[in-house]
Length: 209
Ligand code: SF4
Image (cartoon, rainbow, N blue to C red):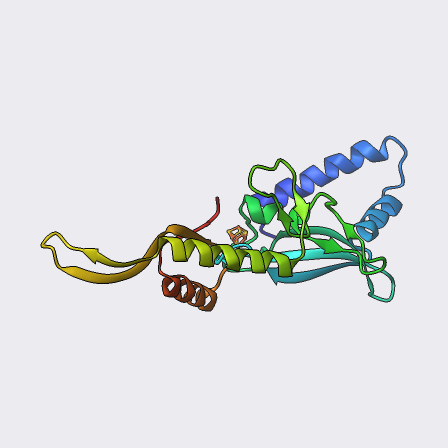
């Protein structure tokens, strides 16, 4: 029988460890089967895709389930080794997903894992040192109002070229836009269309800052 180097090291290593523990009087058969059961009992792995950027790395979400398969709690989130894009790896954002995600316990509706996670819009008025909780309707109305005011106050309709001729430019230079890396092609298209229609010239992406 041909034995590879890896098989040889595995067998000799396991054998040496077994002898050492047996000499101390432990029943290894019972311990080994208990460990095997504990590590996998009622754990459900679900493959998913990281939502943070357009790399689209595959992740596996491990959750604890009861004996009927019903979700009980989140255990861990890791890179998916079977995914051809990231082959089990994840960048710092993806690797920290377990702490960043808003996870709600479906049994009592409470936020779990990271209670410090900001889950509601916060507003800090100009000059203030305090954050106030606002609802999304208020936030969106306020953003729309300020974009309109700033655009109207800064809109450039025409500009003179070096030779003195006037050209229509229809732009504002006082508003910039930073897109999110999690946006897909269609969302990026719609986002840039809207920004260009408003006359913005400064469009950037947050990438993985
Ligand atoms: S944020 Fe990181 S883990 Fe997530 S898709 Fe992008 S590169 Fe992959």
